Amino acid sequence: MTVVTRFAPSPTGRLHVGNIRTALHNWLFAQGTGGRFVLRIDDTDAERSEERHVDSIRADLAWLGLTPVEEVRQSQRFALYRRRFDELVAAGRIYPAYESAQELDLKRKVQLGRGLPPVYDRAALTLGDADRAKLEAEGARPHWRFRLDHEAPIEWHDLIRGEQHFDPATMSDPVIRRADGSWLYMLPSVIDDIDMGITHVVRGEDHVSNTALQIQMFAALGATPPAFAHEALLTGSEGKLSKRLGSVGVDQFRAAGIEPQAIRALLARLGTSDPVEPFVDVAPLVAGFDFARFGRAPARFDEAELAQLNARIVHQLSHAAVADRLPAGMGAAAWEAVRPNLATVAEAADWWRVIEGPVDAPDAGEDAAYLAQAAAAAAAIDWAGDPWHALTARLKDATGRKGKALFLPLRRALTGRDHGPDMAALLPLIGRDRAIARLSTA
Ligand code: GLU
Image 1 (tube, rainbow, N blue to C red):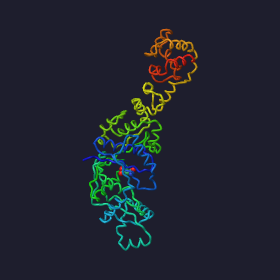
Image 2: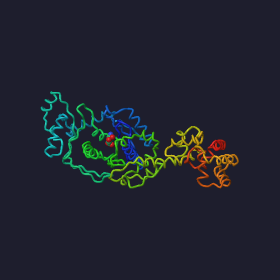
Image 3: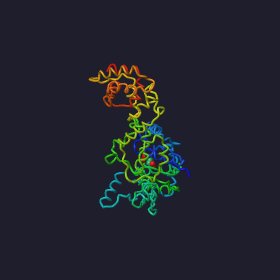
Image 4: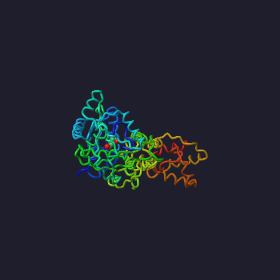
């Protein structure tokens, strides 16, 4: 059996943390099993779906390295949905219902008032042909419900949650199509999962009760349901994922300098008992991916953890991997010199300005004479080898200074800052002439 997974976003906005995680897990599982990862655009809702969001979903997945082998669009599959819908109507598994939203609301209130669960009472099933004809003559148009089989208990072994049981008698027959003929999410998703040969449905645990209903739809359509894995939801550092954090899109992570590798490395492991590690390469994430390692407790998503992981990723990136994001002229030696000091790739530009100059050195104060000595020493040393060690060795001998007193005035004059990359790596990049000039004017 070839594994086929799908990521099924509704194109109503950018991808955010929760659905990036779902996409990633579907992709990782398919990769690890030699399977196929398909993108399904759930755009049956013409009003809320927008083409620009479809484009951004594709671009976001590409940026994350989660490329699907195929893309299908629900909006192009209405003929298939209608055909399967007609079959289920003919089989008595879908029935028309005429209650207005207000009537349903009232029924629910009455039930709740009596301490009963607000389950749809199936009044529409008692209508005869004449009742329906009369309602239609009065201008009523039906919406459509899927009739649950109350005799067939719903059970599945969830790959994350374990054994699941639902009693269909406690659930309302779900509305699957509106009076205007438009589709709700529930049935088209099942029709597609069957048609696309989906073997594993991986999604958030907010879909667990949908799965219960959909399992009966698979059966009604003559199909064996796929395997299901429902992931615990993400929470923020203080409990529930804040509205803000929950809606932070890929574009915002990207603008903040977060690398796709950091997002992958964090979201692949969050919620598992395995440590989050700064893997640049995706191979170890694929190899280590296993639903059994995920717990049922909500996983805590922490932006600070992402930022730290990002820095550890940046520290490993090759010059070739980032060259197109560096200032013109910034070569491999400069990248490697500043890389250990970066939290984001964009910060490399600050250090490139430090290398290229001009730098604003703080007033030398009582170090002025020392720096004049340093300028002279810089003119005298051999720049071909290791100029920083040559310079500091010479100054140490001449002045008896050591430690901070030896190094800090030099760093300040040469870079304008108190902290930064290893001066041994930086000084050759600053070069002889600029170094002498900076030490002289300081
Ligand atoms: N479009 C649905 C959603 O975004 C898909 C759910 C599913 O994976 O079936 O929630």
